[in-house]
Length: 65
Image (tube, one colour):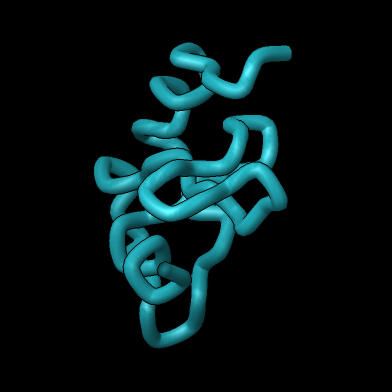
């Protein structure tokens, strides 16, 4: 599997937020994106590989960044 998966990134829209951080999550599936977790391949201004990510709403994504 490559580092970037357009299909995986596009599949996030409309899904539920897998983080659902209490008091933070907006529970709006239209704002769900593929959120990249920290990884050894991630550097300044770059994202980790798509297979090292989960679906998260905008609010949870911002809170985790």
